[in-house]
Amino acid sequence: MAVNILLTFASLLLAQFAHACMPGKNIDVYFPSNSSAVTASEMLRLGSWMVDQRLRYPKQQAIIVSGYVEEREHNAKSLAEMRLHAVTAILTERGFNQVSIQEDSGVYRSGDVKNGRRAEITMLPACPNDCCPDHEPIEKR
Image (cartoon, rainbow, N blue to C red; front, top):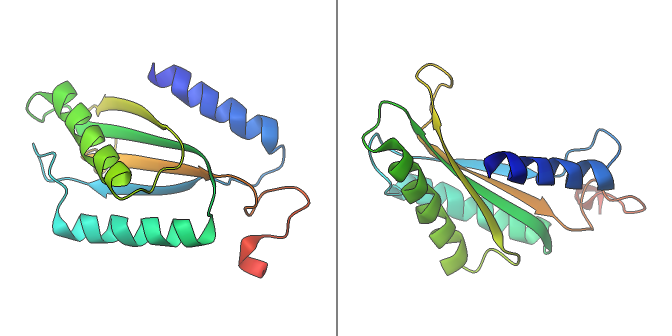
């Protein structure tokens, strides 16, 4: 399922944007070990990101949220899904998403990444955005 979501997202990007521009806007929400609770500092950081993205890009084309854990964490697969759902709930409860959220979860092997205790959010803005043909980048308006 994760591979299908990634392939769909990649083909969507390639079909619309043949040049080097990468329109996806990303943030990682980090968690303490063996926890799916979003800390106050991460909530503040996520809230600021959501406000900034909504102001810069009022329309969305796609949102993908992926929950991850490190393999040494307790009940790793279940915890990854709990992190995914914790972040998805925040986006939904605050009315951030205009489109359905695509979900994925996974387990990082020890040593694969510096911090695998996270949920990754990728938001693909709809046009107008920095990469839309025939549109001036929003930052230059």
